[in-house]
Image (cartoon, rainbow, N blue to C red; front, side, top):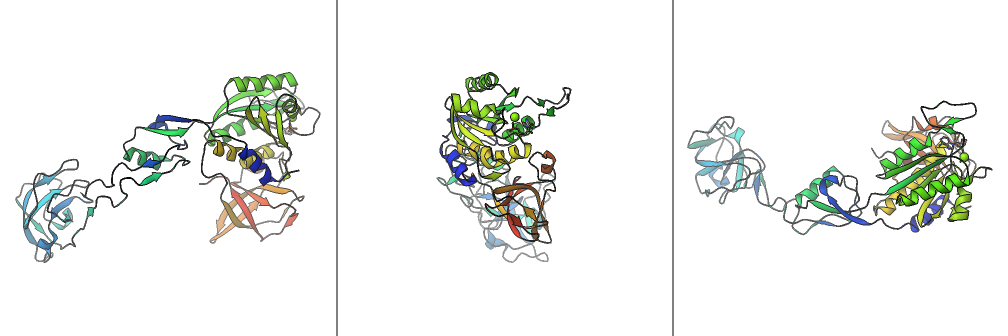
Length: 409
Ligand code: AMP
Ligand code: MG
């Protein structure tokens, strides 16, 4: 049986990149860039004022003090968005608003608070008193001090956040090249499954994985096509797989039917009608994991136990979607934390639902009480998975362990 990291490498290596498309900047949030974003000009693009105040020559106010203000001639006003016609020379000052270009000749801006002006009313005076001296350059944002024309601002592989859309807007581009949104087909199997809203007859259980996996896929930026619950027959599974291929999905994700049971049809259909490249990984939970291809579409089959499906999604499917989208970061940040309770394993690499927190400046992690792979509720208090390495069977309370954070926030 292969290890988790071997399985992940095999899956990631066999996936190809999604096509590139050009979309409107306003639709680019959470999409992965497929082009570099290059500065079209310096930022700031011109010297401008960082304050509402007056622009002047610093040397003129070297002696200014609240007790001996310096008087200057006030020659006008510059709002943001306009370039002053006037030039500043010795003895002169001009009103200037935040963001407005610094007029020729001025080398300093003095905040309105240090003058006798009141910007809340139209200024109706032709002199101004300055009560504070200032160093040359004060309150001026210099052209190019943030970045220079031609600088690379964002790289391909970067996932667009709010601030990234703003940086692209800075460069004047109304559209951006990104990887296509992954379209994922979700197929849930099991004769025992009943959706919420339908009567639960004896022996039946609720379908929980459809909801959990669809949400996880959407969180990862995918567009999800759901087949609904598919019965455990070859024709039904084959029909659902064909429907997904015809719908143009980039990846097929299934839940259930890939282990050793008599009704584990998904794996058999894949073996007979597609390609099964790997099956079974040395991990807990989630040993039955199928990876292969159906009619040239990559396929990942997760086990039906809800905790196994959740772990398998996080360990294999999310990185797979990142790889297909060309995202540059495809592993999770690990946090070392102190165990609040001992944990046991059977020697397979184990992923234990847990809650990671900080206590007195120290990272601590609390494993779920009941770690059965069928116990969906173990995932509710948690935000992370404790990783118990391969061939370790016991970790005592207080030991430092690696914890995989599921929610970056
Ligand atoms: P399987 O992988 O199909 O052998 O299923 C393993 C266990 O997970 C069985 O107890 C199933 O009843 C349960 N199971 C399978 N699919 C789901 C699902 N969609 N929602 C909740 N439990 C499931
Ligand atoms: Mg089943």
